[in-house]
Length: 356
Ligand SMILES: NC(=O)c1ccc[n+]([C@@H]2O[C@H](COP(=O)([O-])OP(=O)(O)OC[C@H]3O[C@@H](n4cnc5c(N)ncnc54)[C@H](O)[C@@H]3O)[C@@H](O)[C@H]2O)c1
Image 1 (spheres, rainbow, N blue to C red):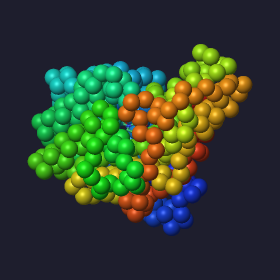
Image 2 (cartoon, helix red, strand yellow):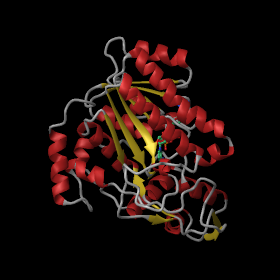
Image 3 (cartoon, rainbow, N blue to C red):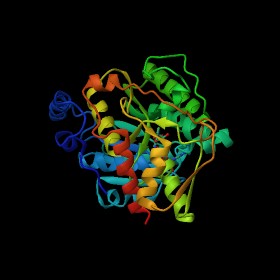
Image 4 (tube, helix red, strand yellow):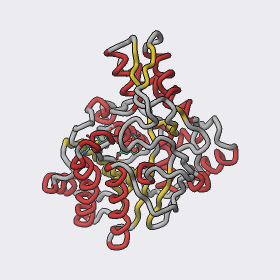
């Protein structure tokens, strides 16, 4: 399914964002600087869940897009619409293969230089990084380091980076962008925080601008991982029982990928500091794991029974309760359409449909 361009979505907003917010958003979309709109951009992790939706949205805005993905978790079918578009070029390559990646950048920027890199490539499997820390070092941190080296060499001035709420660790206070010191509890969070630090340093030396987005749990079609994806695949194997890690009480904000893409585009259009950093998510609504499990069962296998493994953590590095503050983003003029439970319900329907 191809997402609508973000500007169009803004005008069609319904839901719990206030009327004045919607108005501000519509006005802002109509007078956006041509920062990202129609520009030439590079997307790393382009064949992944979020990267592929981003590619579709950028193409819908008129951008020239080059995508790169090592296909570790990415899928070519995620790009089936984009690959039909003459403004899209895709390369199956690793960000850390500097020689190959540099050649791609040189060739693809010969006629129009890249204005921005959207760095979505990373290891997205937090549990795998807990078992083997090299995974997050290589795919989450080293990709950022490699990319920054190439951006300096090829004089690409702006980066938009997919960070995460996992950088905050297991703090019991509201997670605002300016709290610290930060001590992540997963290798994944640690390597994202290190990436943020490297980007910050790069803005002091050669980058013109950086946008850091701290994503919550994102759900929706084309998921390559995550609790809903896991539940659906477990139910396919055993339609009678769903094993759920933890006791079901963990609660987190879930966010639909369509809202996420719109928020990222809104931020890059409107936040014009040298180093911009925003939590993206819903602050006022959360979803428990038991809601997530029940919502999945309702659609995927209505007779299944849930079996909880117990304990309040799903796995090492899992943060059981997240109190995410998104006031900074609201102040910029953007708020999501869907509550956390609505995002989950929509994602369950989409992922079940894709996998049946
Ligand atoms: N999905 C979420 O809930 C969530 C939450 C917070 C942050 N993020 C971040 O958002 C970004 C996108 O995540 P996603 O959920 O779409 O995951 P994803 O795994 O679907 O996408 C990441 C893509 O990066 C690719 N990749 C990994 N290492 C690479 C490398 N060395 N070279 C080239 N490509 C490489 C993978 O093949 C994959 O297609 C990631 O940076 C992730 O850490 C996601």
